[in-house]
Image 1 (cartoon, rainbow, N blue to C red):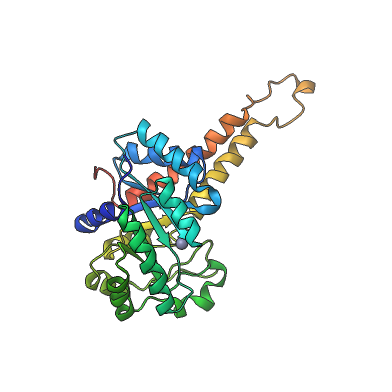
Image 2: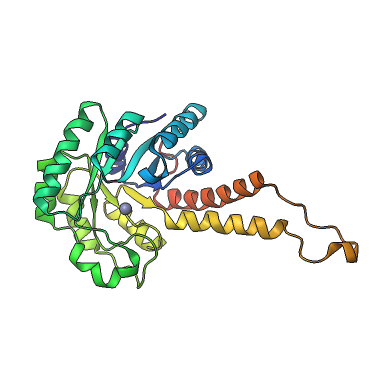
Length: 291
Ligand SMILES: [Zn+2]
């Protein structure tokens, strides 16, 4: 069943666990996310970037939501940019949109997000927005400190915009870290206590199990995961290809060549690698057996 991300995360905040939000982009990653959630009785948030096809992913999510109705899933636009993309996601049936205006000034950020909140809430779609700025891993050491979320700004931001969940910058980064991730748990703990709505952590990949488990315990309800799942899928795919390739001239030795996998089987093996790591994170965030 596709449900509101706001409601899903309010429940997670009340019960003290985190929800995994894999970046999905095709049939295999969307089905793998449903299968992981079904196996663990965990909620899941499908994060879709507009570049991966808003209408295509919405249709696929609806298809698997009908096939696995017991799975509570939210479909969220990840890092929504142009206004048109955000309206497209709402039109396509997403249950949530994330608006990223974190590089604008505070005032411009509030003005643009507020406008979208009004439209999204009118049709029952929840909104995630970012204050402070989660940067890229390759410039982690240089940009980490300047982007951190400030409590007083966050409090007025939530009040002024009317958003349902807040993406905070507490020391994580997108992609692969250049340097060692160092999280501001004290800041996170304060934000979690002083801000009533659920908090979101972008850049979960490469942050480390210990850091992520502690972040969830300290007050994060949604963890975005892209690179780690993508790498796991790629490695499984690579292994499947290597396993199915003949290793030597089998004709000359009379040995049997390894069984060749066809394209479909290879892609399924990749999706299984993605699913396995996603299940690991769902358990790490203590979201199993919650529904
Ligand atoms: Zn992000």
